[in-house]
Amino acid sequence: MDHIILIGFMGAGKTAVGKRLARQMQLPFVDTDDWIEAQEGRSISDIFAEDGEAYFRTLETDALHRLLDSKERCVISVGGGLPVQPQNWPVLRQLGTVVYLEADIETLLGRLKYDTKRPKLQGGDLREKIETLMEQRKEIYEQTADLRVTTDDREFSQILQEIMEKTTNIVNCG
Image (tube, rainbow, N blue to C red; front, side):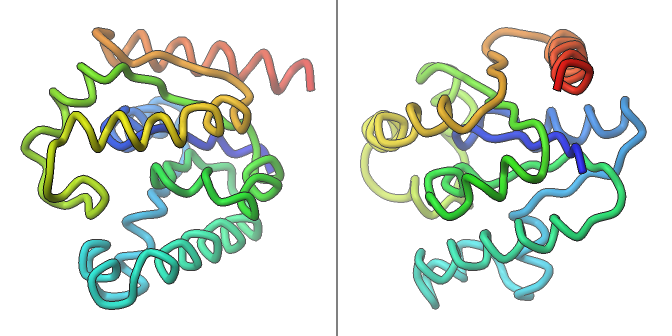
């Protein structure tokens, strides 16, 4: 199956871009975080607080494996930490084209400064947390992705057009 999988840091635009891309391409949209919350009947923050990050990461991997069974092409948005787990790399590749949505620190700060739902960003200095996590994740995002698309200071229409053009080229050449 050649799904389009959006990866990237929290606030890079995976869900917002994913929903619009799915609508434009007339494909279903799946957000793994939303799917996990629905399956668990509780928020990601509650899952982190009650069962820990390791349990949540297992749920993410399970969600990916379930998507392998999907018979219909989808646009999939995954949590920012999902690609960091090595066991997820081959599954992401199997699912389809992996698009890394990239945003710089200033953009992420602007988008995340009032966010209270993301457990990895709670407490302490937001800039420091973003910089530390980005340092840990950026190289993995780059290595996992088939293509990179910047979301800084761009209209959704520009981002969608770039993704559709690039994923069409990958599908046609692959």
